[in-house]
Picture: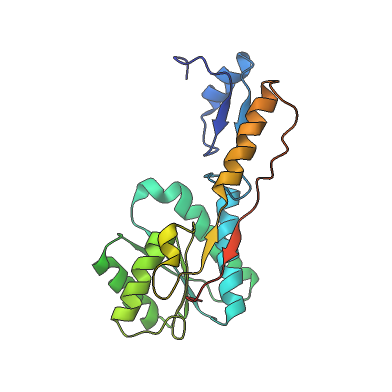
Length: 212
């Protein structure tokens, strides 16, 4: 940080080291965070997304849930809080703890995940993101499981492909565009360029399709 001359800093991950925060403070550089369900790695925001997945699945009928996430450690800053949200959501809903699978994003990994989950009696799957969920959709159909008849699957991010696969993937839209606009307005307000932000950061919402 000390090689830069920032006017303001937005901490998307809420992991900025204490020494960097102190450096910014001594130079009166505004430090802002991004949150409320948008493109942020804030743990509480990410956990809320996992809980939202559970609330949706539990309301659609499945009583035994599984979570499938990436095996790559580099994604853990997002994946682990989302998993914590799923675990907390199951506890709050009176469900058994979720069956947890970490797998590479490959065809074989998806097939193995579905085989393990169905053997464990899982009937609803919360996927780390849409890419993972789409892999699971294909694997479930390949193994002869009806979606959502045998397995309900929900993704995360609402990527364009999620509405094009068959069955179309139920997912969560993070409304990152609204979050970005609101964050930009907060930066401008902190710099005195404009008044208080007026843009709504929005919130994560379920996009209901046919996979649940």
